[in-house]
Length: 111
Image (cartoon, rainbow, N blue to C red; front, side):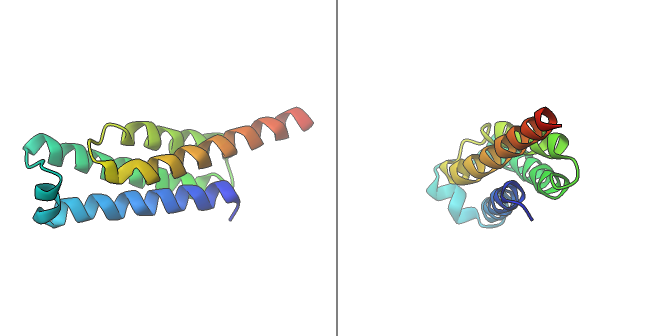
């Protein structure tokens, strides 16, 4: 697995883990002082986008452009989360997606 795939995988895994923790453990949402239905909807959306980033991290080795776009979409969509817990997954996903797109552009220019 290349660096961009590894960064995307780590970011997605952390995003999925954090989303499941917030959804499963009510004490975390109380500590974040957010107990609204909208907060849980945003967290569920972040879970779905983290799964999209996970798929992108596996696709990036065969189709770098599509995998990079999927990881960046997951990072941009993950910013909708109001929780500070998602800062590290967002950074990892966006960095992996950008590396994939830059490497894909360099490979296209080199041919």
